[in-house]
Amino acid sequence: MIEVKNLTRNYGTTIAVNDVSFSVKKGEVLGFLGPNGAGKTTTMKVLTCFMPPTSGTATVDGFDILEDPLAVRERIGYLPESTPLYTDMMVEDYLSYIAEMRRIPQAQRASRIKRMIDVCSLRGVLKKDIGALSKGYKQRVGLAQAMIHDPAILILDEPTSGLDPNQIIEIRQLIKELGKEKTIILSTHILPEVSATCDRVMIINEGKLVASGTPDELQNEAAGDSVLYVAITAKQSDIESTFANINVIKASECISHSGGRYSYRLVIDKSQKDCGASVFQLAVERGWVLSEIRSEQLSLEDVFLKLTTGDN
Amino acid sequence: MRIIAAIAKKEFKSYFVSPVAYVLITIFLILSNWLFFNMYFLDKEASMRVFIARMPWIFLFFVPAVTMRVWAEEKKMGTMEMLMTLPVKDYEAVIGKFLASFAFLAVCIALTISVPMTVSYTGDPDWGPIIGGYIGTILMGTAFLSLGLFISSLTENQIVAFILSLLVSFIFLIVGEHFVLYAIPNAIVPLFEYLGFGSHFMSISRGVIDSRDLIYYFSFIFFFLFLNVKSLESRKW
Ligand SMILES: Nc1ncnc2c1ncn2[C@@H]1O[C@H](COP(=O)(O)OP(=O)(O)OP(=O)(O)O)[C@@H](O)[C@H]1O
Ligand SMILES: [Mg+2]
Image (cartoon, rainbow over the protein chains, first blue to last red):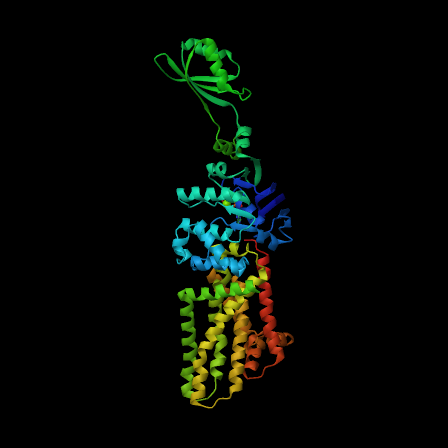
């Protein structure tokens, strides 16, 4: 549905997007993840034909962004980053203006507008000036204008920013729902949002694509040594000598003890699969009482930090 | 075509939601009427010569105030990004906005109807120069408009747009004036005289509609609308 090839965009001497290539399949929900200034917004501005790339190409539904910008724009619903809206217009007038500009046939206009009012819960603010709305309501108006022509592709730059928790959940559900038939690209800083809504994640840093995959894949790929917390009732010297003799345990540290029960934090080499089971096995062999075993999951957050901070 | 109409309608309405438009119209009407009537009842001349002759100088300030926000505001607010990612051709947006500001200007000019009414009530005027004067006024105002719209598309600061439009309009007003023509080499006098608004405006407002003057205004308007489209195409902000 969307093919991006070697896309580069400079602002003067700043390279905002650097040789990025990717493709998005029909019906896929792709999340752009990256720290501030990574180039997410810039990529979206190029895809929506707001500004041309410095080099590289992209096609949307088979149409080239440089040769057929109008065909591309027709197929996309776009929510720009800071949700720029005409603050002096009433919500109602604004939606009908956009409906007109989107060439929605007169006969369907009213029903499309009504649908957007329902989906984005705008009923109560129709007669208000957009400038007088709270940030969250502006965001909803922004979403409504992006979806009003029922586009095949949605490009949403930080769609949930400024929304209250209930609304965030609703919008995520909506995105998931829409994602069944539409192709969606969204950008976000909120990591759980990616796991909650996206089929695939692209992590961008300093204009470059640093990782891409399903949220699960990324978690596994970037996983390093695993960390295990265990609590054992046994003789401390026995426990420590046993741990010291096992190669895959790279470090063990007693964090607390009470009575005869010792809590350890174990760092286990990434070559060892299924370390929980192995420790359990070990305890049985040694006749230890294992009262706790808990592994520390590397979250998407850790993956993100790992890939986007320089020190790795 | 429908898109142009939709943009024009929305832009025209947006003039009237802010109090600025009403302030502008009021100042325009007070100024043009006052400048006319304070002379009129002294001279008792049943013509609008004085009124028409002052229009370029009123427009010099009035039109940049009408056009300054048109593009600059869109750029500043970021709504340009919304507009330019709709399936709209650049020229459609330019013409839509141009038509809206033209309609606004036309409303303002129409509101000066009190002047010809007074003239015809108190005397027996020659209608040729009055109609010619209005045509000249509309053409000149529209030329100022297209210039001001283009300049508004170059900046996101309304005040900068206002001052620049005023300056450039001023240059077009005075290049054909005598004191400029005396100061420049003879060879380029005809060029300057042609470029300046003055000679074209004066001949139309005498009631002589010459196709050369019409061509001058239409190409002026077209040229700056064209530049406006070009400046949208080269968006680098
Ligand atoms: N109009 C502009 N002029 C100059 N530089 C710009 C402009 N817009 C963005 N940049 C630069 O391009 C780079 C990428 O910016 P971009 O807005 O695409 O980042 P982003 O990933 O969307 O960040 P954020 O998460 O903060 O929204 C940044 O270094 C930024 O400073
Ligand atoms: Mg951004």
